Length: 129
Image 1 (cartoon, rainbow, N blue to C red):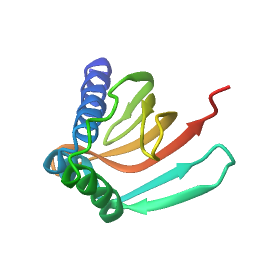
Image 2 (image 1 turned 90 degrees about the vertical axis):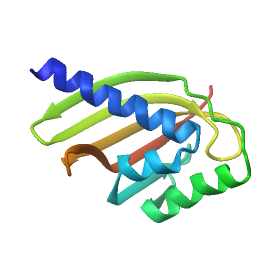
Image 3 (image 1 turned 90 degrees about the horizontal axis):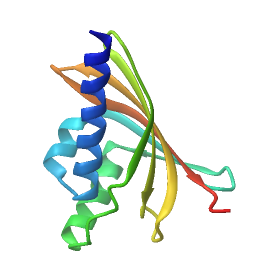
């Protein structure tokens, strides 16, 4: 049963990547929890926090500007399920800051309203050297 849960959680991670890279606002609205907090940590250790409205606004602007889809490359390092909470660690190459960079994402999820939702996302930019 745990393996099936981890498989299901990986699918949620894959759906999040698909929705984010194509600016699918409707899908993101369902995947992101109402109390979402996203922390972006740059290569100098500085962090910036965004709430759901800020994140959705960023994706909406990309959609409105008709930006090209983002890179959907992903390497899942860890998927963990414990009852109604889950955690995913995934490495991505994505352009969130004007330049494509390598990020490690730590995603905390909760099972609520009959679906997995991301409550916290920590995105750490990795140096290229």
